[in-house]
Image (tube, rainbow, N blue to C red):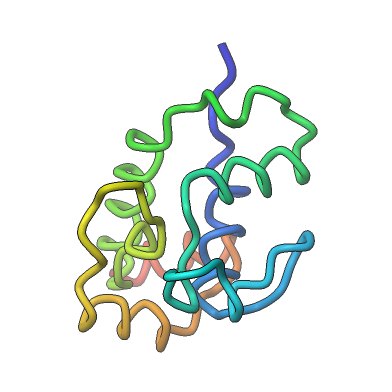
Length: 119
């Protein structure tokens, strides 16, 4: 069974939070009814597959890796990046938290280690 690479997950979500275009996904101009700076699970799977070549990306479970990533970010005193990920049928993300995520300056994944050591 495939597992999610946390560095790639972080890359995708941090680029989305910054509303940057990457791997043919434009986070500043999402799909209909979708807020800028957000990504759906289907879009996440498609971008993850483009980056990794993993054709099973759509079957990967995102919940556990997101929980781990958000836990690491909390220790680094950063807002939860998982806020930008939308699931069908879920309520829209909390506007205040989403604003914090969009306003954050996201370090490189390796830079999180430095932040973790400072906290």
